[in-house]
Image (tube, rainbow, N blue to C red; front, side, top):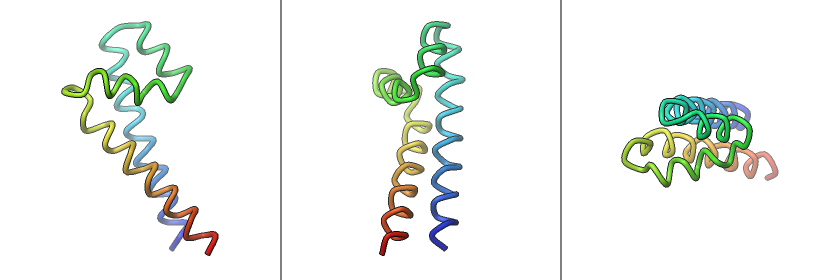
Length: 76
């Protein structure tokens, strides 16, 4: 069960990240390259472009939270 939780979190985070990456590339090439090479920049882009990137940022955040929850439960 814990492994499934972590896999769902990783999947959600990956989908959110790719979604933000596509949005960043359509914004400009430097944003796209930055998000591709430095993953935490995806959150920065999402915060700066909140109206356009609200859903992918929330999806990434939920994915990260599920992954952390799975890791915590695995340690119990």
